[in-house]
Length: 119
Image 1: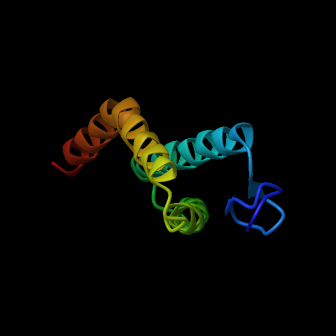
Image 2: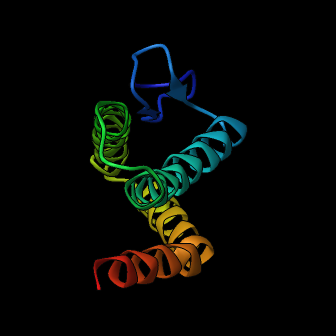
Image 3: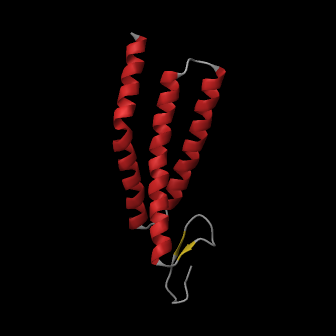
């Protein structure tokens, strides 16, 4: 879409959400970073639920709910990347990297606990 200066601008998710100035673009980058970071939170949450809860209908429903939210976030992140903006791509990648690095120890610890429980 064009802005008042006849320059093309990006839309994010909905037509009214036009990134036609630096502040909007910056907020979109931080939002993309946050979505990607939250994706890693969901990965860790699924592992946590699997390891800490006993097999039950409740655990299964929680895992299904987390999976649905994770898939939704994945598609939202895909739409951001498909905007073909290198800045938005790097925002998503940075969010995934920071989230993974932040929660890596938690994920490793839970997986080790799970392996020990199997023995």
